[in-house]
Picture (cartoon, rainbow, N blue to C red):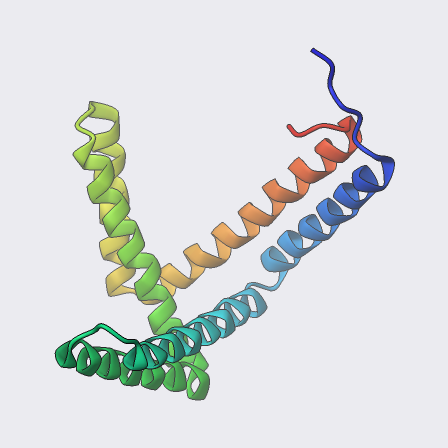
Length: 170
């Protein structure tokens, strides 16, 4: 089996992207408040995009009047939530982000428990407990989101650097 040689410019680009990802991960660890604010800003942007999409769907052909009404109600609710996140980013943004992470942990815990193996049941129960604790204390959800962002950026950065050095995907 002959493996194609990765062009040098692509290898250099991977190494540079890896260094940038590592630096961003380190920055998220050093300044978690800035990372949380960035995640909250992305949340607000995402909510605005969802509200626009749901509003545009009102004008789609082939949907019933009830569905149009539900799309309108959803678009207004999501738009108001996006405005709340933009106006009160620390309170509403932190609360929304924390609860989203908590709900994700709860759903992940249930999915792990549903696998039925002893190890997955134990891990699922732990994840479920952490999810409920994050639901009660949303700041824990924000901290979890920032930690996952930092860890993800560091792992991505290391993988890109190694791929660039080796000239193949690792």
